[in-house]
Length: 405
Image (cartoon, rainbow, N blue to C red; front, side):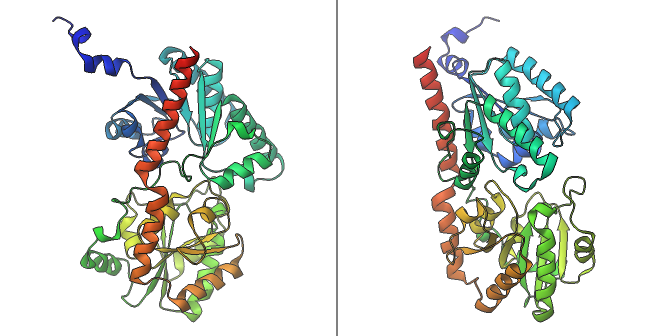
């Protein structure tokens, strides 16, 4: 069969696209935290995804995002031998693929990805910071995490903190110079799909059926938490504060959507017992679609110790929920005190009790508030706007590379 590609301008356009490799530690990040973004980028670039294989989940990312993927085994823990193997494998792939840009997300993918990309001579090595585990670490673990973080920053040509608070922390720790740092748009790694996270998607009947199925009465005021059940997320303080409040306000429920990670950052046994046994605490486990649970809730409680730019707080806002969040970076950028939520100090059960009580007494969930809260999220974090800004950043890098060639 003759090759007509030389006479096909569309084929030439495809061949002329610059190659960008996106790396995350696990497929859930590649296809979840960056959902839709990779597919959007294929209109302008050749996108290749790299992550752990993870029981076929990487293949699903390839299908959903319409990109080519390459499995490389990476672990979220500190595993020196496996990490060295990952660096070697990534080096081999990058030498073969010859991308103009490598862009990594998540801590481990950042370290092994940036190191391999530098050794392989990739000209533009970008890493997005979406949280710093070292903030809560101490002793030898803190020293090790600091060291690893500096490797990532030194190997990268640009660092993108996904919040202004993170940028400030990075500068204060002298991990990188200001000229190497940039926050895209107003923060966030992927923005929020306002059409997807919309309370109007769910009918009154659907919401009532869901409430009945998990034993929530019509008169109950429902607080929701979405995320991992780990100490750093403030779960110990959350369940302790709610248990205390529930004594005075029995028509309250705490709806927990997420799963335990006992091997990484376990919560207290007494907290686990409360979650299992308290009649007003409802744990539904991890859910692919969290929207129905936001739809039946009245307010978000998010007592995390550290974040990059929390998707959960944006999602709750897009669903019209008033949010009580800790005074940490990301959270205190999304929430404006008294407008779309309230801010309280982390690791403080008494402060959280006061916040919950204030929400219950003032009824911070009227219908008119819901639309205003949604509007505040849409104006600053609409997904398509974030994607366009990242695309423009890539274009700027490519243009500069072409002019210097």
